[in-house]
Length: 350
Image 1: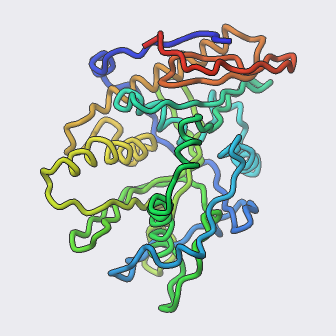
Image 2: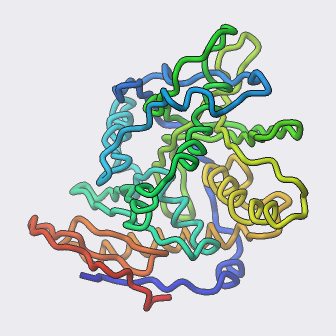
């Protein structure tokens, strides 16, 4: 059952509103997961960044790679995030919304990415806190099922780079890559690195996880994974956390492939950093393909619309927010009765 819809206007509409108030994020909790997905409320899963031994073949070890295990119906459960907050004595009621950054990437990036559908699970808790759950669309699940070996290897390269840059290095062989090992915390600075002499160029952004931030009047607790930490004088992790990105080296700064990278993939890198104010949220660097104010204003409007819609429909506790925020659907009512959401994506709101 469709509850309400929000139209998506031309991008210029959101640019003209100016840049909203964007509070500086601060760390409030963190946790680590080991290879068996066991959680520890410490930094045992955080490695220190080091310059990798280059050249490096990112394909090595693919056969022994252990991919991340998860429930396809709940790719990124929030239970560990809530537990980490509780461990630090932080109340979820201190924020309007609790979410992984993944959901905000989808929502805030919609104005410049209108071709990909998406879904976000919405749960209003008894205490009033709104939880946003990561969901995969049918399209996404079908794409994952169709991935060939080449695509699987490309996914592996990112995890491999993390072991080269953020794992233990005694000069010997590196252990097999296990994608279940991870760390979630916050960041305090940004670092960039480009190496034009290598076929794969790591682009590093300080990035990270359970932080408190505000966008105008909306307060959020946001969690995200990070790869490693910048190192201090003694090699110990410093305050700055680092996320690693891999990209194919482009033959020319003016070819179509490079322009596509700057317009689409680099936009996603910028948005991830901007949501945590690691890059200034009102700055898109040297790239002319997007306006920061459009992304932040649209996302701000969606979050405010969502909270207002939930307040106007107090009987239901669970919803699904679908495709560019075209509509908010009731998933099942407060009485516990199940209801299947519509199978067709609503487009009338656009």
